[in-house]
Length: 240
Image 1 (cartoon, rainbow, N blue to C red):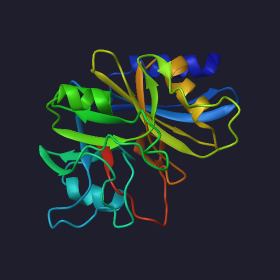
Image 2 (cartoon, rainbow, N blue to C red):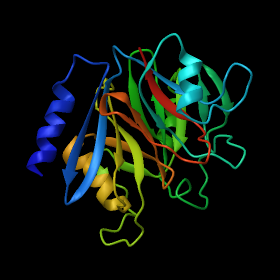
Image 3 (cartoon, rainbow, N blue to C red):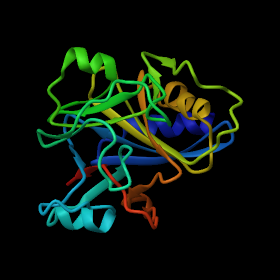
């Protein structure tokens, strides 16, 4: 826990780079967390190229943003077999998939789920029903589920001793919307452990699960570019 807290302090304090990524250990599990100052950095969602083709991975994404470069990227939401977003998806002000608030199968339908909402100077995780009422003006948005942390509380359906263990990734945001912290587990964990990492170590009052098993991180400062055979759907990244 001491090492984890020290890493988090470095995450929050580091301002020299566009993104600060560090490894942390929590209850014997390894995590990597990348902190972004949403007020100053160019944080965006990505899905398709200018011809409408699914980007699918880091190489295509890097080509899409050239001549600028990627400081960080991560898969950022669930998708259908044809790589369409499962829930709400907005990119650069254009909505291509609607908000889904009904119960359903799988992790996405394990309510409450939520929306990762990005503006030019903020990033917030908002529970889906609250999002529907508030109708925030998101430049970019990706809906996923379940919520990991809601107003400082763990999702009510999570079980501490759940045997469902996977590599998982997600995002938590600060109360003021200035800071977004993206995290991935480096070994299989259950939802309860992953959510407590956001709540107790990263100290984010709201956090959202992006995906499990296919979770991937691109972090050049760590010489890391996770590889997988399947193409990704929505992705999030920082351009510099």
